[in-house]
Image (cartoon, rainbow, N blue to C red; front, top):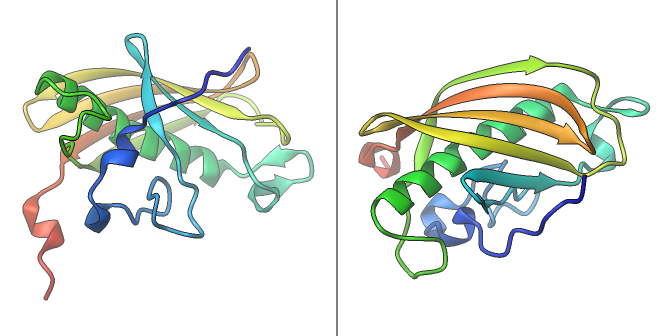
Length: 162
């Protein structure tokens, strides 16, 4: 499967205070820096696992796959609500932020090392403040995992510092 490039990702638009997530925070130096964008009506995140993501020789650690599905889900929800509000990444309007309300992952087959992964998501609004994202993770043409994230609009209290 030919991988596409994500030019402008929703995570590129997050305010600095919200850009520290280990999975998708652009300011987290040791993080994954996952980036999610539109691919038609679907969402897309592409990631090349690093050597330290090895579970056993030749295969990727399942926790990385869960993190990919998790951050892809919250990023996809942010994309969808941003679009619903009449905006797109790159238009200069700060997008909404989401947190994970639930995460479910089914591992379909072992994920091989050395192949860029791509997560493809479908987004469904289930409540004005909650969105469901179903995701399939592919290594090449093989679907290795499927997941579902219910993402909730991040409460303002998350940024209240004590």
